[in-house]
Length: 123
Image 1 (cartoon, rainbow, N blue to C red):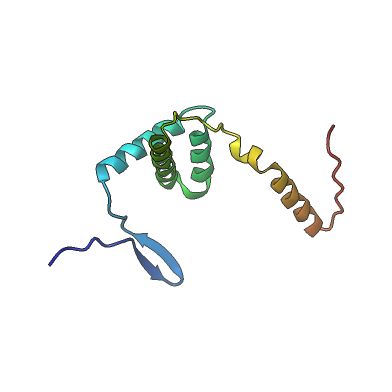
Image 2 (cartoon, rainbow, N blue to C red):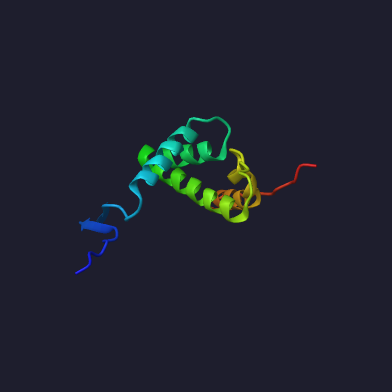
């Protein structure tokens, strides 16, 4: 009888869910990408370092390293698929991308606090 690889299990108690185990895959490749992610986190003014810092502040160092490693794997796949070199997005890519949405959220937050907001665009 063939062995079936089990997917991620969950331990649940009192409404808390805790992941048990990891998904099957090449553990050597995964550890190489996590090591590269830790190295990328120490670089200055890069998208991956900013992503690492953002996630690590909320979820911790280990999960941030795995998340950045996943981003690197996805980037490598698309670079090979499209035959393009890597282009770093920059550390402030997310803030530049969502300026209008961010302003709308801040206005809504101030209005919920009871303030009237009038926005005058800078020339």
